[in-house]
Image (cartoon, rainbow, N blue to C red; front, side):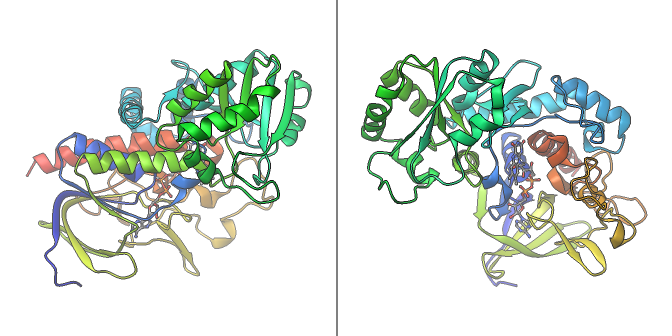
Length: 430
Ligand SMILES: Cc1cc2nc3c(=O)[nH]c(=O)nc-3n(C[C@H](O)[C@H](O)[C@H](O)COP(=O)(O)OP(=O)(O)OC[C@H]3O[C@@H](n4cnc5c(N)ncnc54)[C@H](O)[C@@H]3O)c2cc1C
């Protein structure tokens, strides 16, 4: 425990992934004094696509063009899924608030009003998602119309191959040409990294040089697909400038993670939250928590060891699953890492995984997590809320498999939104 005075706040959000960042945004927007404590987690691996609901039921692998119809089916078939606790209006409101915030931070999104869009992945497969970074949007129409496009590869960029993309697409998009170019200022024999290229393209000089390299290869292409390197903090602006120089639509294709798409979201959240006077303890971890029934929570945080305390009236746990560190596995089973909350899990360790690793139904361990009441408060062993002002959101919640169901961001935003609304209501009770 430290001897410095605690930072006091209405709400401490633990976890700085998609759910934690969104929760902090919703909380400051509702006038709650908010401290966010978190380490960089899965968010930097994200493709930038914002999934709402794409696949259900998993065993049939049914893909849905209408994510709202998909959610309705999930709620009917899996009444314990976190979406079953949310109204459509809440899910829409959560998306709208995050997208407006991203837009103000220079990270623009596009999409069909009520339909998933089919987007290209880094390996040339096609995936359905709800909202698409504006810098990738021309690719959706180009693919739909099988437009004659040029796909650009960059010498030395690992894990991105336009040949592979074309091969995976097979004959489904015949009018594709590919070219590999040396990015200006890089060595043809060396490795190049998306973040460095993206930061370089934020300067007009670098864009002019790259446009000069690309221009001779256009040869009537209707659009140009490039790896996701069009800037970090002003990606739409970088794209528009490049389009103007080339006289042709340009679209990004995600690179292998970690690329710049996750970094854009992370930096947009951090920039915007700092501007809203959120208390940000980034690259910090909560090591221990003491719970008082009436006065709230005392959290010991720090980067390597606890060196400060946060006194919060309420806590929102958004610490993710195994990769984030919210859930941990030991020989006794799965446990929640800060409060030692009961974790819903298969009874026996042998039941965590199915025999076939690639089983379409996924593995029972991936639906493990915290069970909550209708207000997103984790439950104790007998099914009562552990504490009236302890809430949870995001992938730490039980009864969902966001990776396979393609609902990662939707689940993170909407459960964070509902939990924060409930935090506010609970705090107003005094
Ligand atoms: C490779 C990859 C690709 C993805 N692609 C997509 C996509 O295309 N579309 C989509 O919608 N979603 C995608 N996602 C999912 C999305 O990025 C989120 O990971 C997911 O929605 C879960 O978010 P979360 O905030 O609940 O958990 P996490 O992202 O896991 O965040 C948990 C956070 O809590 C922190 N934490 C844990 N313990 C502590 C502690 N004691 N103290 C402080 N902090 C702590 C972790 O460091 C981490 O920052 C992808 C994820 C990955 C990994």
